[in-house]
Image 1 (spheres, rainbow, N blue to C red):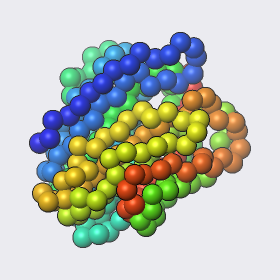
Image 2 (tube, rainbow, N blue to C red; image 1 turned 90 degrees about the horizontal axis):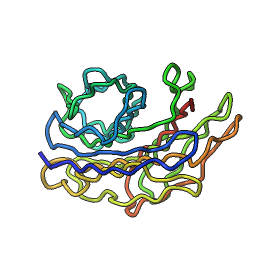
Image 3 (cartoon, rainbow, N blue to C red; image 1 turned 90 degrees about the vertical axis):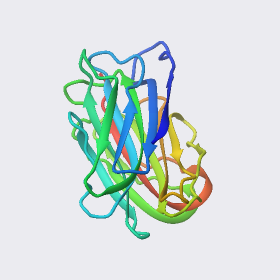
Image 4 (cartoon, helix red, strand yellow; image 1 turned 60 degrees about the vertical axis):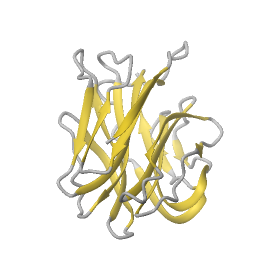
Length: 235
Protein backbone atom coordinates (compact mmCIF):
# COMPACT_ATOMS: atom_id res chain seq x y z
CA UNK A 1 0.00 0.00 0.00
CA UNK A 2 1.27 3.46 -0.88
CA UNK A 3 1.58 5.74 2.20
CA UNK A 4 -1.08 8.40 2.49
CA UNK A 5 -0.40 12.09 2.87
CA UNK A 6 -2.22 14.40 5.27
CA UNK A 7 -2.12 18.16 5.45
CA UNK A 8 -3.76 20.76 7.68
CA UNK A 9 -4.62 24.39 7.26
CA UNK A 10 -6.69 26.61 9.50
CA UNK A 11 -9.93 27.83 7.92
CA UNK A 12 -10.04 31.50 6.95
CA UNK A 13 -12.02 33.80 9.19
CA UNK A 14 -15.61 34.43 8.22
CA UNK A 15 -18.81 32.51 7.66
CA UNK A 16 -19.60 29.98 4.98
CA UNK A 17 -18.22 26.58 4.09
CA UNK A 18 -14.46 26.25 4.46
CA UNK A 19 -11.92 23.49 3.87
CA UNK A 20 -10.35 22.83 7.27
CA UNK A 21 -8.02 20.06 6.13
CA UNK A 22 -7.73 17.07 3.84
CA UNK A 23 -6.05 13.66 3.62
CA UNK A 24 -5.50 11.24 0.79
CA UNK A 25 -4.05 7.94 -0.32
CA UNK A 26 -4.77 4.79 -2.25
CA UNK A 27 -3.99 1.17 -2.89
CA UNK A 28 -3.49 -1.29 -5.74
CA UNK A 29 -5.73 -3.72 -3.85
CA UNK A 30 -9.41 -4.01 -2.92
CA UNK A 31 -8.90 -1.95 0.24
CA UNK A 32 -7.35 1.42 1.11
CA UNK A 33 -6.91 2.91 4.59
CA UNK A 34 -6.95 6.72 4.56
CA UNK A 35 -5.96 8.76 7.63
CA UNK A 36 -8.59 11.05 9.07
CA UNK A 37 -7.96 14.70 8.18
CA UNK A 38 -6.64 16.91 10.97
CA UNK A 39 -8.82 19.26 12.99
CA UNK A 40 -12.09 17.33 12.83
CA UNK A 41 -14.77 18.59 15.22
CA UNK A 42 -18.26 17.23 15.75
CA UNK A 43 -20.68 18.55 13.15
CA UNK A 44 -18.14 19.03 10.36
CA UNK A 45 -18.91 17.41 7.02
CA UNK A 46 -16.43 14.75 5.89
CA UNK A 47 -16.54 14.17 2.15
CA UNK A 48 -14.53 11.36 0.55
CA UNK A 49 -14.08 11.65 -3.20
CA UNK A 50 -12.68 8.67 -5.06
CA UNK A 51 -11.59 7.14 -8.33
CA UNK A 52 -11.47 3.35 -8.47
CA UNK A 53 -11.31 0.29 -10.68
CA UNK A 54 -14.07 -2.28 -10.13
CA UNK A 55 -14.66 -5.42 -12.15
CA UNK A 56 -18.43 -5.27 -11.62
CA UNK A 57 -21.29 -2.78 -11.46
CA UNK A 58 -22.85 -1.46 -9.30
CA UNK A 59 -19.92 -0.16 -7.29
CA UNK A 60 -18.82 -2.44 -4.44
CA UNK A 61 -16.68 0.18 -2.63
CA UNK A 62 -17.95 1.04 0.86
CA UNK A 63 -16.86 2.17 4.31
CA UNK A 64 -18.73 1.69 7.60
CA UNK A 65 -20.47 4.88 8.73
CA UNK A 66 -20.24 6.60 5.34
CA UNK A 67 -23.09 7.21 2.88
CA UNK A 68 -22.49 6.79 -0.83
CA UNK A 69 -23.51 10.14 -2.31
CA UNK A 70 -22.88 9.50 -5.99
CA UNK A 71 -20.94 7.28 -8.39
CA UNK A 72 -20.37 7.23 -12.14
CA UNK A 73 -18.73 4.80 -14.54
CA UNK A 74 -16.64 7.14 -16.63
CA UNK A 75 -14.62 4.52 -18.51
CA UNK A 76 -14.83 0.81 -19.30
CA UNK A 77 -11.21 0.34 -20.35
CA UNK A 78 -10.75 -3.32 -19.30
CA UNK A 79 -12.76 -2.89 -16.07
CA UNK A 80 -15.16 -0.23 -14.80
CA UNK A 81 -13.54 3.06 -13.88
CA UNK A 82 -15.68 4.76 -11.21
CA UNK A 83 -15.62 8.30 -9.84
CA UNK A 84 -17.80 9.40 -6.93
CA UNK A 85 -18.15 10.51 -3.35
CA UNK A 86 -19.14 9.41 0.16
CA UNK A 87 -20.06 11.67 3.06
CA UNK A 88 -20.70 11.66 6.79
CA UNK A 89 -21.28 14.18 9.58
CA UNK A 90 -18.36 14.00 11.98
CA UNK A 91 -18.93 12.87 15.54
CA UNK A 92 -16.92 13.80 18.62
CA UNK A 93 -15.03 10.48 18.42
CA UNK A 94 -13.86 9.94 14.86
CA UNK A 95 -11.29 7.16 14.28
CA UNK A 96 -7.70 7.81 13.27
CA UNK A 97 -8.33 6.37 9.80
CA UNK A 98 -11.03 5.01 7.51
CA UNK A 99 -10.85 1.83 5.45
CA UNK A 100 -12.70 1.81 2.14
CA UNK A 101 -12.98 -1.59 0.48
CA UNK A 102 -14.97 -3.51 -2.08
CA UNK A 103 -15.27 -7.18 -2.95
CA UNK A 104 -14.64 -6.56 -6.65
CA UNK A 105 -12.47 -3.43 -6.39
CA UNK A 106 -8.96 -3.83 -7.80
CA UNK A 107 -7.54 -0.37 -7.11
CA UNK A 108 -8.73 2.80 -5.40
CA UNK A 109 -7.63 6.40 -4.92
CA UNK A 110 -9.33 8.59 -2.28
CA UNK A 111 -9.18 12.12 -0.92
CA UNK A 112 -11.10 13.13 2.22
CA UNK A 113 -12.20 16.72 2.84
CA UNK A 114 -12.91 18.05 6.34
CA UNK A 115 -15.41 20.90 5.84
CA UNK A 116 -16.69 23.40 8.38
CA UNK A 117 -19.77 25.61 8.04
CA UNK A 118 -22.04 22.96 6.49
CA UNK A 119 -25.65 22.55 7.61
CA UNK A 120 -25.54 19.46 9.84
CA UNK A 121 -29.18 18.45 9.45
CA UNK A 122 -29.34 18.99 5.68
CA UNK A 123 -25.82 19.11 4.23
CA UNK A 124 -26.82 18.71 0.59
CA UNK A 125 -30.22 20.48 0.61
CA UNK A 126 -31.68 17.47 -1.27
CA UNK A 127 -29.86 18.53 -4.46
CA UNK A 128 -28.84 15.49 -6.51
CA UNK A 129 -25.22 15.62 -7.75
CA UNK A 130 -24.79 15.88 -11.52
CA UNK A 131 -22.21 13.84 -13.39
CA UNK A 132 -20.41 13.82 -16.71
CA UNK A 133 -17.96 11.50 -18.45
CA UNK A 134 -15.74 12.36 -21.38
CA UNK A 135 -13.04 10.94 -23.61
CA UNK A 136 -9.44 12.06 -23.38
CA UNK A 137 -9.03 15.80 -22.86
CA UNK A 138 -7.10 18.27 -20.75
CA UNK A 139 -10.15 20.54 -20.41
CA UNK A 140 -12.42 19.18 -17.69
CA UNK A 141 -15.98 20.26 -18.47
CA UNK A 142 -18.35 20.21 -15.50
CA UNK A 143 -22.08 19.55 -15.87
CA UNK A 144 -24.75 22.18 -15.20
CA UNK A 145 -26.61 22.07 -11.90
CA UNK A 146 -29.80 23.80 -10.81
CA UNK A 147 -29.72 25.27 -7.31
CA UNK A 148 -32.90 26.00 -5.34
CA UNK A 149 -31.07 28.66 -3.32
CA UNK A 150 -27.54 29.98 -2.88
CA UNK A 151 -25.30 26.96 -2.19
CA UNK A 152 -21.62 26.12 -2.34
CA UNK A 153 -20.34 23.88 -5.13
CA UNK A 154 -17.79 21.11 -4.76
CA UNK A 155 -16.28 20.17 -8.11
CA UNK A 156 -14.90 16.63 -8.33
CA UNK A 157 -12.69 15.46 -11.18
CA UNK A 158 -10.90 12.17 -11.71
CA UNK A 159 -8.96 10.19 -14.29
CA UNK A 160 -8.10 6.52 -14.36
CA UNK A 161 -7.52 3.49 -16.52
CA UNK A 162 -6.31 -0.10 -16.24
CA UNK A 163 -2.62 -0.58 -16.95
CA UNK A 164 -2.11 3.09 -17.72
CA UNK A 165 0.46 5.44 -16.28
CA UNK A 166 -0.85 8.36 -18.28
CA UNK A 167 -3.21 10.23 -15.96
CA UNK A 168 -2.84 13.68 -14.44
CA UNK A 169 -1.07 14.57 -11.24
CA UNK A 170 -2.00 18.28 -11.45
CA UNK A 171 -5.44 19.85 -11.76
CA UNK A 172 -6.16 23.57 -12.06
CA UNK A 173 -9.69 24.54 -10.96
CA UNK A 174 -11.74 27.28 -12.62
CA UNK A 175 -11.59 30.84 -11.29
CA UNK A 176 -13.59 31.25 -8.09
CA UNK A 177 -12.72 27.77 -6.80
CA UNK A 178 -9.93 26.63 -4.48
CA UNK A 179 -8.37 23.18 -4.50
CA UNK A 180 -9.36 21.19 -1.46
CA UNK A 181 -7.82 17.83 -2.28
CA UNK A 182 -5.37 16.48 -4.83
CA UNK A 183 -4.99 12.73 -4.40
CA UNK A 184 -2.36 11.38 -6.79
CA UNK A 185 -0.84 8.41 -4.98
CA UNK A 186 -2.01 6.12 -7.79
CA UNK A 187 -1.45 8.29 -10.84
CA UNK A 188 1.73 6.57 -12.09
CA UNK A 189 0.89 3.00 -11.06
CA UNK A 190 -0.02 1.61 -14.48
CA UNK A 191 2.81 -0.94 -14.41
CA UNK A 192 1.30 -2.45 -11.23
CA UNK A 193 -2.30 -2.51 -12.36
CA UNK A 194 -4.31 0.69 -12.46
CA UNK A 195 -3.64 4.44 -12.53
CA UNK A 196 -5.98 6.92 -10.84
CA UNK A 197 -6.06 10.51 -9.64
CA UNK A 198 -8.79 12.40 -7.78
CA UNK A 199 -9.26 16.15 -7.37
CA UNK A 200 -11.74 18.33 -5.49
CA UNK A 201 -12.25 22.11 -5.53
CA UNK A 202 -14.68 24.18 -3.44
CA UNK A 203 -16.31 27.43 -4.55
CA UNK A 204 -14.94 30.44 -2.67
CA UNK A 205 -18.45 31.67 -1.92
CA UNK A 206 -22.05 30.51 -2.22
CA UNK A 207 -23.25 30.27 -5.82
CA UNK A 208 -26.54 31.98 -6.69
CA UNK A 209 -29.79 30.07 -7.15
CA UNK A 210 -30.74 28.90 -10.63
CA UNK A 211 -29.03 26.93 -13.41
CA UNK A 212 -25.26 27.12 -12.97
CA UNK A 213 -22.47 25.76 -15.17
CA UNK A 214 -18.97 26.17 -13.73
CA UNK A 215 -16.16 27.05 -16.10
CA UNK A 216 -13.90 24.12 -17.06
CA UNK A 217 -10.88 23.07 -15.04
CA UNK A 218 -7.62 21.83 -16.55
CA UNK A 219 -5.79 18.49 -16.26
CA UNK A 220 -2.07 18.45 -17.01
CA UNK A 221 -2.49 15.21 -19.01
CA UNK A 222 -5.14 14.39 -21.59
CA UNK A 223 -6.98 11.23 -20.57
CA UNK A 224 -10.52 9.93 -20.14
CA UNK A 225 -12.15 11.61 -17.13
CA UNK A 226 -15.23 11.92 -14.98
CA UNK A 227 -16.59 15.15 -13.50
CA UNK A 228 -19.15 15.69 -10.74
CA UNK A 229 -20.87 18.83 -9.48
CA UNK A 230 -21.98 18.59 -5.82
CA UNK A 231 -24.10 21.19 -4.00
CA UNK A 232 -23.38 21.82 -0.31
CA UNK A 233 -25.73 23.64 2.05
CA UNK A 234 -24.12 26.25 4.35
CA UNK A 235 -25.18 26.43 7.97
